[in-house]
Length: 409
Image 1 (tube, helix red, strand yellow):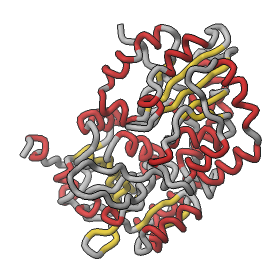
Image 2 (cartoon, one colour):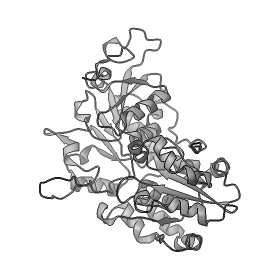
Image 3 (spheres, helix red, strand yellow):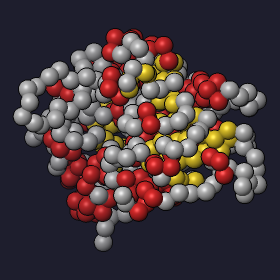
Image 4 (cartoon, one colour):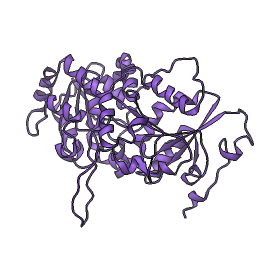
């Protein structure tokens, strides 16, 4: 057994919770972090509890996380109380909050599950092997994750829209009774950040220039996998005095190849003017600041269209998507960026493909409760904790100004 799994912390949880307590919280909540994407989603949710002096929040990194050391470092930088997964599974908590599924059945707490993207879109990737192929479930609707030995694992689930709830009823009807339509907290924080657009543009060096934001999800079919030279082509073709290009890479991209390696691969393009956003935060500020977004089948592209940004698609792998999902719907209205053709001319045509009505359609697929997600999720958490909510309103706060990364020397 690794040394870190043998560590047993004494702190504001479990039997020793009051041993050295300055405050005396009435409830203890576990935030379960499976990977960096989940961590950033929990960063939108846990502040709804953390300010309450009646509540102590503790974090743990679940096993199987992509680059668990990096995720652990992120949690340490938060200044949070962090315990091992072994200790988390042998301690009682009043509530556990997670944005992914694996290992949740091992916890001794009511579990609230929240999505870490825009809903049920992607099919599970088919594993290689000698056995015959079988049908693939949708990510987020896997029965093996939602049900363990005859019992639904989450005590409560958040889904963004009524449409997602209906899909849950079809995919795993046993879990549907614990689901609540509560909108999308990431979208609400993005929408709350729009008034700070000029501040974000200044931070990205795009005050008087057209800001083109490029977003890539991870793995086969992603923009960076299918069109790896797009970023260098954009910085090479677009006039630097009138355009600024910024890049958002999915946290799994960073976790898989390493922070230093990705910056090294993009160093030359960054020296040519590319702005690279870190994986922890900055993508929403970039979307708020953008004039145009180029993306793929990742959630970020849909968020961009939902807030009214003209979107072009550089990759859309239909084989990975449910034809009825939000991303597929986006693919039916967003123009395609074509390799080998003049990029300046293509970008000039993108805005003309979008209308306010089209943006509203995508927004309604992303969230069924715009502006209300923080309040709905907080109410659900306090119900699970069997506590009265604070009197102050739950608010979606604007995101901080982006902090682009420097090119490696």
